Length: 298
Ligand SMILES: NC(=O)c1ccc[n+]([C@@H]2O[C@H](COP(=O)([O-])OP(=O)(O)OC[C@H]3O[C@@H](n4cnc5c(N)ncnc54)[C@H](OP(=O)(O)O)[C@@H]3O)[C@@H](O)[C@H]2O)c1
Image (cartoon, rainbow, N blue to C red; front, side, top):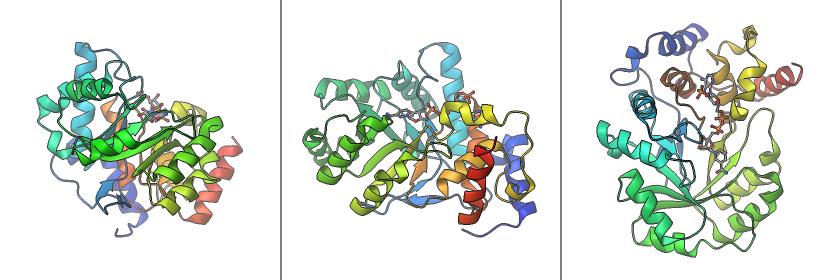
């Protein structure tokens, strides 16, 4: 990706925030893409997380989901992460995607609690899709958990990729065992500037087994933004971040083992802000260390 001078980077990201119509057609510059190691298919590195935000299937939630998903696609994004257990989220997303006729432009990841065919059929029905892009086994906790059924569904074309997830650090040893044995296409774990447990073993192992990495909780469930509320961004961060959300998301994305971040939001302006992290340069290693030091000093 072309490196931007500071004024260009700040201007572009600022324009995204202040004037969403700037994204009404195609994005002005290439977005940050990362390859899925098992196929080389490229994915825009910022997506949408949907835990808690679309729990209730009502008119207000439907409107919010439609606006957020349209914003995602207009700004060059594709990835939506959901789960069979996120309240009505799969149904809300399914309706919004069908109404906007956007299925072909999206890359949808969902999660099952276990390899259960009726749970899978329910997800396909609720998402109004014949194919899931990534089918993940949610919250792996036992090193013996098998992905055989997921693999069979992949062979049948019901899903394109398979994966495992967990954000429980006590379960990371189980995730490591399943990742090493089953070699899924994707692993999803939590990782942020103040939550770096994944760096110890999961991220190196994912690189070794060539699994794409989806990053949950990149904003610490919103805690990171609350920590900096009312604080000015330091001048040294402005060349690569036009907002605090971009500061935190780009810290994660600067780790090249990460395929994509999936910040959760039901707010289209926040979605546009987060998608700004797809543009402009990423912090280098020294800047990344300085970012950690800065946040830890708050
Ligand atoms: N085991 C698993 O597989 C697992 C576990 C947890 C999460 N996940 C996935 O990871 C996704 C992300 O996690 P998360 O949603 O819990 O936490 P998160 O992405 O770290 O933070 C979400 C919070 O940040 C706020 N936010 C987002 N963008 C913002 C912006 N630009 N400016 C200000 N506030 C902003 C949101 O509020 P607003 O709604 O007001 O924007 C929300 O409160 C989930 O949605 C889910 O898809 C997976």
